[in-house]
Length: 471
Image (cartoon, rainbow, N blue to C red; front, top):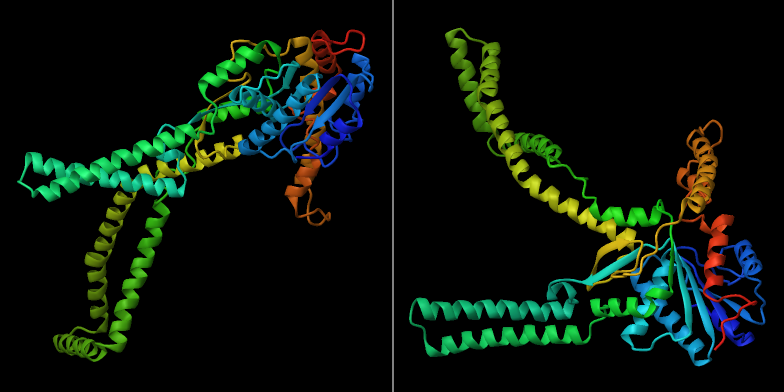
């Protein structure tokens, strides 16, 4: 984690802290700059002006978590670091307010979950505001083997195999042949080992569990729900995309994806058989084959038939036997490809979509899976509705205006020709054409109406020099 947060703490010690948490990919090496969460940004200037903040009373603390990697593991680690920072404010009797954009809100939420899990409540927290945050609800995997790493999985598998073998021996002894007592005892020992093995692993996992329980999530709502301010546009692209992708399972790999392979196998098989016989004739049975051919030609010449008739005979044999056999072989392969292709394509589609969803969510947790994605923290009864139209409309207009400008740039990039000296690196050109103001999700802090709303929310919770919240 960056040291800039620590520097800010040591150089000033005002009674109120305003902590800003950036989202995915929005980090920087310095706490000062043009991004909304940085000191000296346009947004920060407008916010300070609207709240009439003075540095000697309110300290703005940009919380940096690397560059904002799209990783749930990193978000939780950042949440732990943020929790430590907030507890230091509690110890210093300093009130604090939190503002997080996108998955910066997830970092804040993870810090709250951490405080509940550790039973270290944030006593001086006045408000935590999330802007366009897609909340991921993680739940532990159902089966124990899904939560184990390589060593634990090996031990678990060994126990299951021995339990099944022991159960089989016991069943034979009970229902079938009479077995030696030693063999039966060995079977019972296998079953006992399997049960103890599984029970020990299950107990270890639950005592060592790294996930947040449903009870802890409900307690988080009870402790911090009333202090939450959720601001989000109903057309926010990140929230919509990450929630809707859960329902997408459109086929990427078709059921007949093996058909081209069958055609290739047919071609390769014919070539292989032809080469095999050609090599066999050339190096092994050439004299015998030539002798037989010479015998047939002499016999046909005596009967009045020539080489042409022999050629026609070969053609008829190919048409009557070889082609039908190859055709039947191809049909059998196609039939088998269809039988195998359908379940295999379904399996491949599941693998592909699972990978896509995990990349989109930043889901890199071994023991948990995403259960739901939404605009509200999991199990929260306290609800924050989407932005009203008088604020949503300017946001929409701002993004659409920038989208039109960007579309023109994209058209120019795609229309570049080699004769005009256009760059062949279309991907880089397109990336440089985007300023991310085309999306509502990244435009919140550039729209005056939204800044006024956020300012009002912070002021209503007590953040103002005119009415500082002091105990």
